[in-house]
Amino acid sequence: MFNDFSKFNFEVIDVNVTGAPEMVINLNGITFSAKLLEILGNPDYVRPLVDAPNKAFAIQVCKETDAKSMRLRKNNPSGAYSSSCSAVRHTLRQLMKSTWKDTMRYRISGDPFPKYKAVVFDLSKADELPPSHSGKKKNI
Image (cartoon, rainbow, N blue to C red; front, side, top):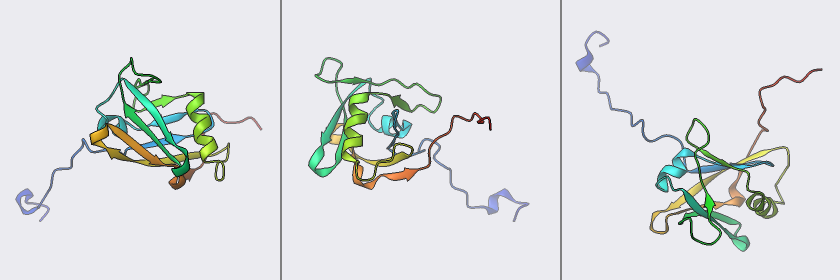
């Protein structure tokens, strides 16, 4: 079989479908995945939204001139976006206070709502991740 290519039943791998619409939160910032931004059409501006009783957070595409808009820029090689917006971080930490640990990171998958140009995150379903390290070795 390995001598005749025509004997295989290959399928093309869709290299455009990578990652998931998710965000990662830590004490210092929030990173939105490249897939999440792609789903939203790679917007320049979004509005951060919160539904505190349901522990839900969302980002919704908006215009620069809309009230409380937040600018998005792809600022790392993966195409993801990182934000250090303290107001959003503080709000998310408060909503997650029963499980939040300052030393940990949290990954949350988002549910897209294309009609509303939004992605919604259930903060009660955050996956705890180990702390990220800068790659620098500590002197002992």
